[in-house]
Image (cartoon, rainbow, N blue to C red; front, side):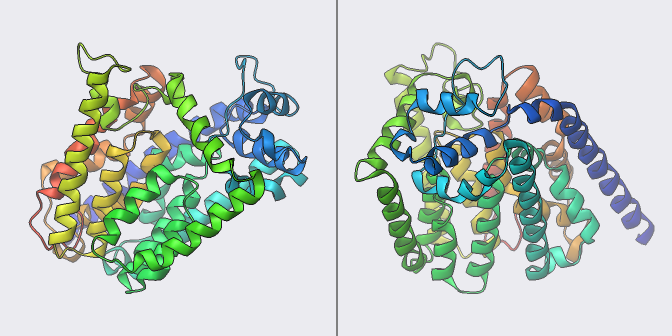
Length: 399
């Protein structure tokens, strides 16, 4: 038996290393494009430059964004801006990066993302006994092998910061510091479509989360008003709705791994029709209330609650892309501990298949870059969601 356990650890580590190398190979291949400004970090650098130049009122002006991006990017295929579609207060975070040219600023932000990722994994391992029993090397490979995390770092997205805040919130909840957890979640409101559902799911069991969440949210709202005036939040909402309504390829139903994407792939459904909107609303409400009921009535562990909340949030989010799946990193690390037989955890073939699919970088690349159909990854999330809600409670680790 010890020999079989060692063999299993070797196979898992080899698989994770192979997926990590795939992610590194992708990074090497796209580096020349990154130097020219193809990555999403462009939007943050643009907003910060506008803010620093005293053009806060043009933060959501597509023409102003495009003019600014032409000064530091070289993307011939782009005939308009890569739009900054985040709340005004987030632009402040990136103003210090504008003292550097674009490429050095991106490298510094990338380094910070790597540090936040490493600290997140270290904090999870230090706090949860299931992860403490797993080799730090294996957990590190688990983080670097998870494609959504890798692409979030490559793109220079802010999702690693959100992941870091989410990890801090989960640990605070497990320690009983609910108000502190709420403050950490509120700090992630630069992605409101993900944070607001998370807070609702957590608050239904831990209402004191709102004690920390509310004042931080109000402060961030006040900062946005100070930047753009009283119409700032309204301009932001209009801008986001406008982008979604344009049917841009990056935000279209073929790219979003959620219920919206799945519904709009159904035969005979017009993505802009009322039938599609009703089906999206009905399916999202069903998933939302099933999760709400499970969390409210159950006595599951904090990690189970947070995993179920994260999976549900991605499924019901109207806007979600491949790197948003990074929120599932705590879950995949706990899944790794289960696969490795920590604390005598029982595994079956379906659990192993789930782990392989979650880490399989070629699958992500095929769906996202080859066939432009990352929406079908939502089927895996839906399977994971059903396994979670049907797991008898209380549960100590994710199903």
